[in-house]
Image (cartoon, rainbow, N blue to C red; front, top):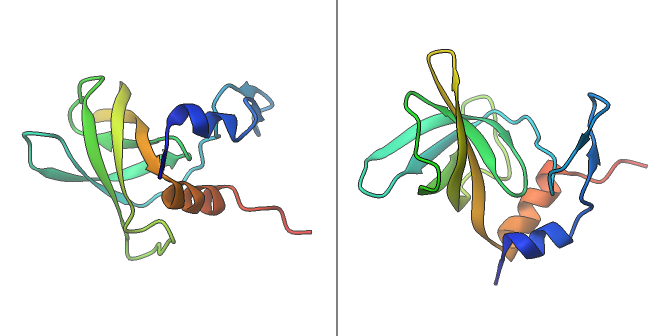
Length: 133
């Protein structure tokens, strides 16, 4: 069973207090995680990039070229030599929602289209662990 983004949003509070003392209107806050992502655009070959940040609803990564907003891509999280995460090996479908010029390339922002329930649970547990008591 996949959870739509509308249902995902109802599972958490609408606002999060960030370390910069500002409220963020994201359904889930972004978490800085740095591992690789293999992505494919329909009609193009696969490419590999590094994730800048990830949330339960999307992620951002760098690319040499912009990717058109609205493009649907397939993401596959990859391991690196220094990071071994529970999320490695997950495949997700995402839509490009923004891109902005950064240094010698672009930072690409995505929103996950459909997240299977088990995948969503893995993301939630890994990204937002319960505080230790």
